[in-house]
Length: 143
Image (cartoon, rainbow, N blue to C red; front, side, top):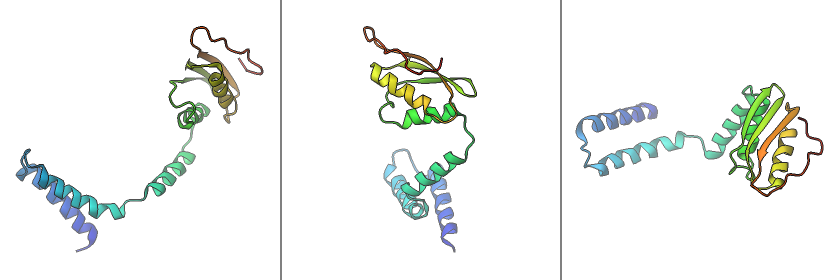
């Protein structure tokens, strides 16, 4: 019997036992079978690094809009993760940014990130600041 056949048989047995024999009050047996399954399947699974490389490759191959790239950049940049920034596509090369940021330096950094995202030609700034914080005037912002 091959290893994959044995694993499928073990998984089937697990399902049958869960459906017919195990009582809700018998978690130790269920945990033991689950652990055995995990130990058998774990060597076949890719490592975390391999999974991350595969997802990165898939991400690069998927067709995306420039606003999707900007959204990804904002979500993966540690400086901006905690802010709820909404990006509204206004056209193929235009991004409207909405959300609340704590200070003007953060606002400027987000706008620069947007302006330097490939495919975005115009950024419409609708980011808000807390009361009493004055935004600096735009230097070369497209509106």
